[in-house]
Amino acid sequence: MLAVREAVNASRRAPLLSLLGVITIAFSLFAFGLFALVALNIRHALRGVEERVEVRAFVSDGTPADAIATAMGDIRAFPEVAKVEYVTQEGALARAREDLGEFTDVFEEAMLPAPLDVHLRAGLRDPATVREVAERVKSYQFVDDVRYGEEWVEKLHQLRTIAAGTGLGLGLAFAAVSIIIIGATIRVSVLAREREISIMRLVGATDSFVRAPFLIDGFAKGIVGGLLALLLTWLAYRTIDERFMELVFFDIRLVLLGILSGALIGVAGSATSVWSHLRRI
Image (cartoon, rainbow, N blue to C red):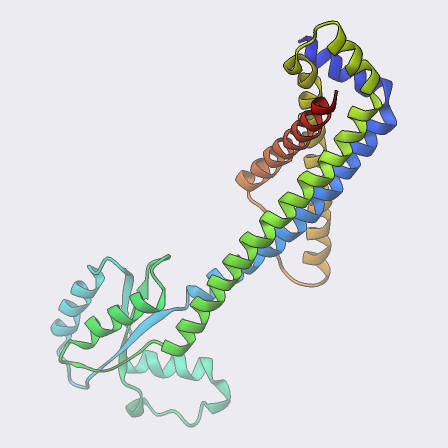
């Protein structure tokens, strides 16, 4: 309680300095939040594209319905498979005309074989897994051909890997920059109370006692700055979503994680600044 009261009193004695600290933290986390929003929407877009990854097996004409039903049951039992759909020739014709409306008159029912569409589970759509499933499906005697867009699947997987690696690297870089900026902001507060800290050390105050108010101050500023950054990020999201393109926003778990991250970054910046300063006293 004493440390909390001391942190509150320090903020009251220097309100402009405290406000500057909160604003600096908010804009640092706002930059991080914008990056996180971009990364989230890229991931969402890639997930939407990945959902279209499927293995399409073309069934020979005249294949008995019971043979197709048995094979569908076997394929549906594959651990990688989410669902299997059988599309009749009529259904294949209707789908082709819908997807390629400008070529409606070209398609004939007889030229489109009936396919089995095998949809894979989320997280199991990498090239190796898709290829393995395609080979197993192709082993059925009544399957004439199997298509799954091998080159497209490989490029999608590469893009997803690059996006994940780049996002992780840039995310760590933004977090490091935020800690440095917040640490510099807290350092100003520490320097403003340098004489007070020196007196406290002379009368026997321990490092933990001296450090505690600054850690609480950093935690509080991180929370307030995180909330302000979240508000700014939401306003940016609404502006882009309404005027330019449709976006998705953070769910409640990511919102709470962002606020907690702001608090932790505030504590980390405070701890770094106070530790560095106490070493010189």
